[in-house]
Image (tube, rainbow, N blue to C red; front, side, top):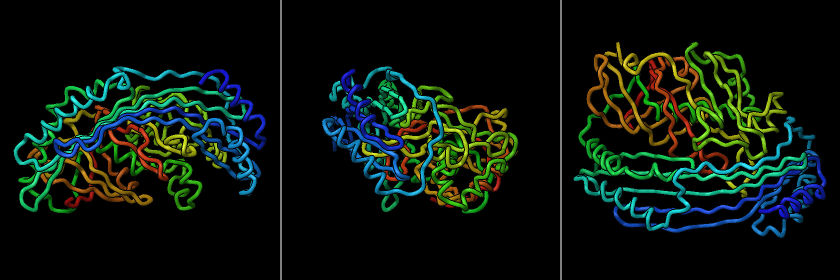
Length: 458
């Protein structure tokens, strides 16, 4: 995409008319490798070129995507016409300064420079490591990398050309004893560095051994427990149960949520602080970027400060609707979608306690780690932990079967009574919303302790 393409984009914006128009152009390449057991199920490369135009006119949004760049001008006119047909009350956008910038990718060991055969050789080792553990019936290995160059321009004068490389890996082992099947898995990711994929044979073998060990582990009786969450599970909890409630497109569309997420409302003790940001806690996480898909600079947003709700996540439209500042959280999965409000790196801020402090004084509780997924409905949540250990007299004791944690997110936040000082970020997996999945994000936390957490067997 050269200066001629820039001239063409800017001309199309000028000629389209409308209250506001923006153009996204994207060049993408990717590779995917998947195993079931030792069998290679999928391997290949892909590439795509396309774009979209989003327009605001006459009180409505118009959107038109395309794969043929020669149709740019026609699609710009089409988006404006669609917006005018939809109509409605005038939509305002929060003001942001126009920006012109070129952002190179964060690169370590570039996965795009490696042949598929080299990537396969690394992953062969992990499938073999898991399948070599006695008691393992099957395993799954899923690897993907993607390189995207994205050009964004709008009718207010912004022109941002940025590039990113994303890498992800999932290892999962399944063990069987008769009708009893147990599994254990890990999700990992990186922004622009293949190196994290290497030297994981021991971790793959450990995953398989844990799956086998779960076959003999006792079940946990359901009830209320004091639980200590590791950084992975606590990060997933704050992302899924609280982070999505902080996305302002949910808030302005749902009156009940407006009351639940009212700024100034106390959600926990003074030790509880929650942030989201495309630049924190470091700018090299999978959820990090310099500009969002509306050309707004990524930033740090306080969501909960000293136990009190102080912020929400915004696009330019939601910021204007709620009379708040844009936060740089408008994101699209790719050029086929319009940007919506999404999280970036969401985390609980470290506290002052040591990890040992969290276990001290817990006579009979649970230490829960890792995660398999879950669901949320407004303020109610249910999550499955990947591992559970009994805590007895302040010490980690026997491995138990995986458990499910459930409850009301606001009551649970109030019940967080201790936060350790060991922040760790989880970069595996991706976030889904409104059909856009998996969007690269990161979430994290230190170890946290929750009193009166409702537990059920998974």
